[in-house]
Length: 276
Ligand code: PMP
Image (cartoon, rainbow, N blue to C red; front, side):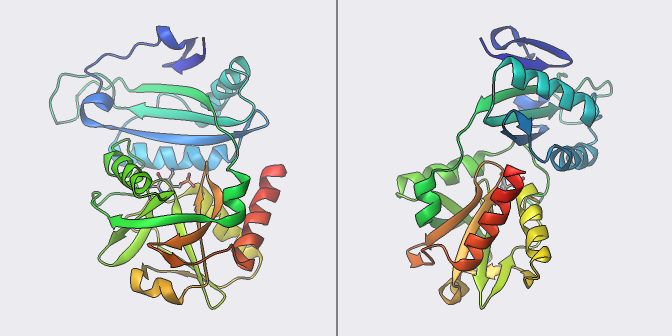
């Protein structure tokens, strides 16, 4: 049986117990991270921990374990579960408490981690790009916080699949914000366009890609892209921990593929980082 981490202990998954009054379960009062594992090594661990710390600070959930300590446990889990290529999922909740909306006085946060095998993105999809649809962004006003309240994201992904698409893009006031579990980039006249970190999830992959783009001397515009501007765009791609850099072939039937030169260049550079 797979091993998991729960509040400082590594146990069999079947023996990991969380009280049903845990605020993570009752209120989605929790933050999470998904960290990529390549060759048994967590990728961009520090960046993920920094984001989790920011989220926890915002929610005033004290962190029971430091980033280095958690990394040691993560490495142990990876080894025990022989998870060479996959992800480590980490969740921090405010912990069990009587069901009252206000923060409990005595907080006992719950921390848990598990590993999951996840393959690299399908090479055929990367070669031809994916088809997306747009949906209204019905999420709340604090999308910078990586909360486990992911129902709009789950519904969005489900709707995309039912409409025969790979994923959905959220649209707020006519502007594309991000994917259900990825950030969105477009290329117009050689310039990279992506939504600013303003009520979207600040993706670790997004930040890496922007860093790469900066290094290549590319011009970047962090601004909202209106859906009616899509027709004028030449390329587009998604970024995410699991998705890496995924070329987009179409959005609502508007063709943006096959993957363009800039997308392929950034994809190549990102894959270089993974190899390194
Ligand atoms: N946006 C949303 C809504 C997400 O859930 C994710 C996945 N965590 C991302 C963007 C991409 O973030 P990252 O690159 O850190 O995986």
